[in-house]
Amino acid sequence: MSYRFRGFLPVVIDVETAGFNSETDALLEIAAVIIGMDSNGDVYCKETISCNVEPFKGANIEKSALDFTGIDPTCPLRNAKPESVALERIFKAVRHEIKEQDCNRAVLVGHNATFDHNFVFAAAERTEIKRNPFHPFSTFDTVTLAGLAYGQTVLAKACAAAGIEFNGKAAHSARYDTEKTAELFCKIVNRYKEAGAWPC
Image (tube, rainbow, N blue to C red; front, side):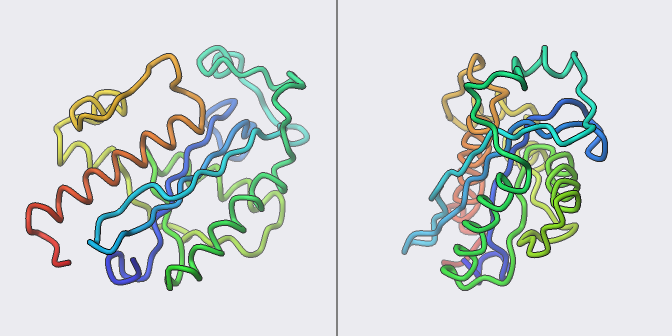
């Protein structure tokens, strides 16, 4: 893996939020899929970690965002964790995998990756987490990759073009969207290798 991505470990991230502003709006869900590589050089979805998140103190919550995602931040059944706990759970697993796969750092993979990257870094700064394993500005964006590989940029349509099952009713949960984005990322990377464009 370290050879394939110049020392980076790809980790797919998706967040569900209470708005578009990473500095002011609440982070409500976060999920990560760690990408592995088999002996043939094919990448695959290795592990999923997800957590519901408590809105930080003073966070802005847009009703339109809640209506879109269907998330009720006050529901006790969410078993939501503070941002610091949720992030550290994911960061710890990522740091372990960086070491396991002999990589130097993680690179965030996302569908519209800048959005997820901004929320992860804003939350890490709020919670004063010092050992953020993700590259501070580099990302892999599956919108761009899917547009190149399949001519589609919407996640559901890109998955359909790639032959990946997608349930629209399950979408807009961080775990589901992350897993589908990870499947799409792996499909594109492996397709590129199979075409002979990447040496094993």
